Image (cartoon, rainbow, N blue to C red; front, top):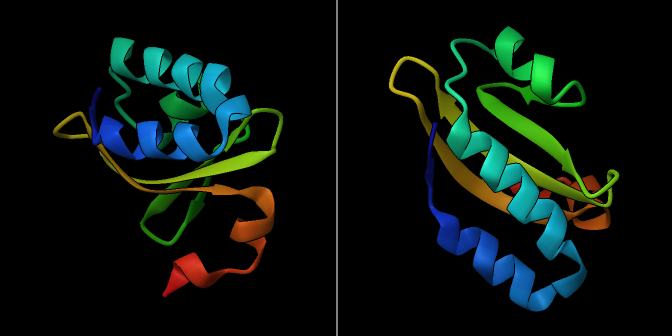
Amino acid sequence: MHVISRKALQQFIRSHPDSKSALEAWFKIMRSQNFESFHALRQIFPSADTMGNLVVFNIGGNKYRLISAIHFNRQELYIRDVLTHAEYNKERWKT
């Protein structure tokens, strides 16, 4: 899977250094896999969930949320946002 853009992860890690190991582990898994469907993705990330056309990942024991758009047919994942759980719960990302 091609992850676009890693820059979003790096920016989040700068402001939340404790997220580094969890986000790097997620990134390593994502770029090494070719998920054919959301079902296949859930085999590796059982807590992943859909919100409309987006896929939300729980990162770092549910401390962080990574919101993405995934095009399984093109093997591309676009990172829309990385948020703390508290930021995610405010639901501002939905607009």
